[in-house]
Length: 331
Image (cartoon, rainbow, N blue to C red):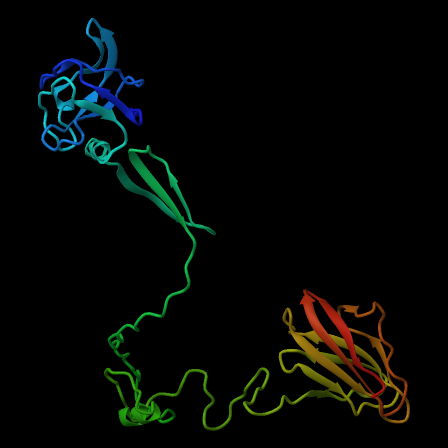
């Protein structure tokens, strides 16, 4: 409820007032129907602030109505009797503001949601008395790095175990001391099963004899090409891709007609075929292996010049299919 205050209202009491409730006569009633009136505002003994709830006119003249005893002597003043001639005012004074403050309803404020956004925004999703403030806050600058945490505890060490099935003469197992030296002081913590000798390792070559199969790869050495030297006439060169990825056809007889076949290639395996003309008559290629998709769409023709080299690259793309490329000709 909003109480209206008629500023600079001045009247006189025209009939004695008791210190209770009821209709109290004044020389002129306020133009507002409710509000506060200060009686004898300049007399510290008689000053009283009252709250009226209605106005009217009776046989004694104009009056104001005070309905509740709690509306007498508000704002720190006391309810008391008043006599004819005392002044009644209704202007905005300190007493009015104090009385308004004494009867004000304290708002209840709670925090609703707090979210991030590009700009700062505050909205109230509640009421003026029971407010719920929702905040949208922009992201601030990145703070300083925190203090580093303490180091974790050391993990448990691994256990190195060497298993020897039975005594033998072809496998020497290093001692525990040698193992620790090899690990350069960073050996795992645990136990070691050690022996001075053991059995021959599975699939290892014996000290004498034996045969190795497959492609040879030596660490720190260049790959050695597989060479082919077909004789004169119609000859077949069988490329074995399990042995090498570089295949060189050279030293063949003059006028050789070469037909290529291929074996043991795997999908996506790349390899090279290099052909060097030699002798006194140039050689030719009678046919290539499998199905080859040549770059540019045309099958290359071997350079018909003595002592010139042509080199071709291939990639297996599927079962019996290959992509072919000219690396260089007439070299």
